[in-house]
Structure formats: structure tokens, C-alpha cells
Length: 167
Length: 155
Image 1 (tube, rainbow over the protein chains, first blue to last red):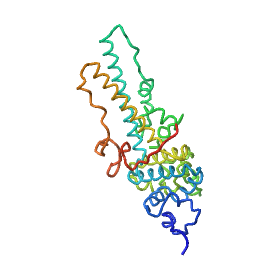
Image 2: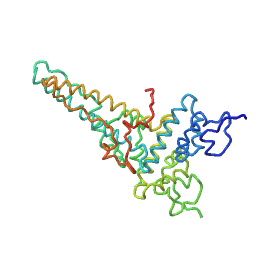
Image 3: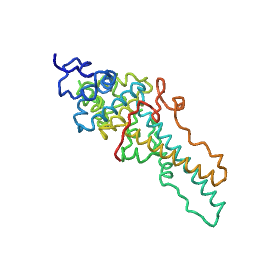
């Protein structure tokens, strides 16, 4: 009796799982939910296309991130994992504010304790920039773009939500 | 006769844009790129299914987030939005460490070693996400979400 057992994707799609099946390394038969969820959100052919466009050594990470996004979208049909991004950006903003306050407090304390020392305040440029960027927030998801390096690099001169708001 | 004001989706799919087309409120004809990107990642029928799952009054937000994810995935085919989440988590960790250091320094300068201000509260459970706009059970703490995969991104 030859042949290997079909991977989760071939099981779900009811087809023969060949030796060079593109899904088999990433969707083992013992975790059918993993393929089911990405198939539900992205579709098998889109997953196949995406994986084939990537070098082999990056496909496992790609599958992990796709599974994560698919789970997020099923849990939250409105925001998917973009809701988490928005939340984390708000956290970063808050922390940057707290850092700025704490740095100012240290400066004041040092001024009081040793006025002659007069250390140079160490204000991070990003803290100030983060407040200036507040008014450029996309309207619909209240993105706090103080994590400017992360988001601005991804959307250098674009604001997908700001421009594409259609309602 | 073809509707002369077809939405971007129906234009791309070369079909008639009916008055109740699910795409047309969110994929206007003046922005074909928007639909192209979601179609490339999800396919038209999956996008339609996702929009149908969202409450009608939140479909615009759903369309925006779907497009955002598609756009992220096109820009970063390996990590997509998960890459941004990883980087944000790193930023948060770094900022928390920095804040704890500074607060300890403040306490030391004030001579109150025992009164170190409480560090920024770690998000450890879903109840901390009260303001997070989420459907369903809201249990989506990305910072300490055990289901979030561990990525080691190259900068």
C-alpha cells in the first residue's frame, strides 16, 4: 500500500495529494482547521498564488500570517486584524506621551536639584512629531499615527483610509 | 444596456452593476486600484461574502479594513498586517522598558526608592480592551495573544 495521506487542503478540496502539493508542507492533515479558515477567507487558489510568488524559505511565515489574519477576520468581520493595529497604535501614542511627561519631569527635578548643571532636555523628535501627526489620522478607524515609522513606511505618501473613505 | 456608472468592481468584472450591487457603495469607479487590490488578495466573491457578514451600517468600515489588509499584503507578501502588529508590539515593549527606567530614575532623584510609580499597565487579559472596537467576544489582545505567531522581522 503506497502513497502518503492527503494534506488538510487536499482533504478539504477532495483531490489527490501529490508529492509536490504546494499546500502539504504547511497544512498538515492533523490540523484541518488551519486550512479551512484560510480557504474560507482567502480561497485556495489565492493562497496557492500567494505562496508560489514567494521564495520557499518564506512560505511558512506567510502561511502563519495568513492564518492569523483569517482568524482575525472571522472573529471580527468588520475590522479583522486592523482593529488590533489601531489599538496598538493608540497604546504606542499613550506610551510616547507618558515618556515625554516623564522626561520633562526628570528635567524639572534635575533643574531644581542642580540648577547649575542645566542638562539638555532629551526630547525624542518622534514624540513631538506624533502629536503633529494626530490631525492626519484617517477618519474611519482613528488610527493614531504616532507609530509613524511603522505605518508611514507602509503607506509612505498614502492614506488608504483617509482617501478611500466612501461613506 | 450597461449601466454607465458601474462601480469599480463591476467595471473590472465586466458585468452589469445592479442597483443593489454590494460593492458599489464601497468601490467607486473613480478608484479602480482599490478594488484591484482586494480582488487580487481575496477574490471578488470572498470580498462580497465578507461585506455581507458585516452589519450594513459598518460595511464601509469593513470595506476599508479589507482594503487595508489587502494593501498591506501586497506591500509585504510574507507578513502583511501581521508584520505591522509585530513591529508595534516591539515598539510597545521598548517604550514600556524606557518608561520603567525613567520612572525608576525619577523615584531615585526624589529619594523615594520604595515609591516607584507603577509601570504602564501590561495588557494581559481581554477585559483591558474595553475601548477596542471589536465584534463578537472581543478577545483579541494582540500584545499577549498566544495565537499571534512569533515573527523575527528583518528591519
